[in-house]
Image 1 (tube, rainbow, N blue to C red):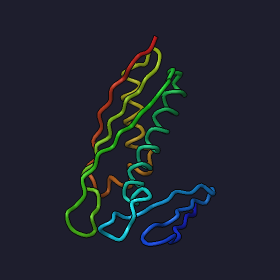
Image 2: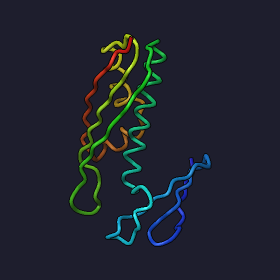
Image 3: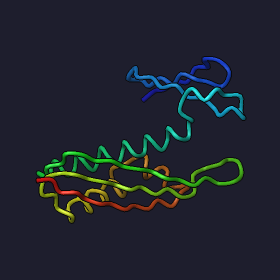
Length: 139
């Protein structure tokens, strides 16, 4: 994998992934930014949410669960001093589908957290990561 960040202006950067996709990152005005893009540390949390959501949906669909939607909301706390690493992260999952098995959803989240989600396992080296979930059966 490869990625790069290139200064656009001020404290705004264009991030580019090896796949060619881009994202604008910027700092807050107090650090010279203009608030025109996502903060780099926010991007880490978005990546974590996407990584675990991908795992959970993939695992459930392989288990023949009819998943219609999956939303992962992340809240985090950072250390007060530099480096301001994440010290606590909480993930809230909302999984919707037809006749979903609570046990399978719980197992999919556990497998993501313990085995498959590289982002979660990496961030877990500095932060205590907790999970909660809710399922909504449709139809």
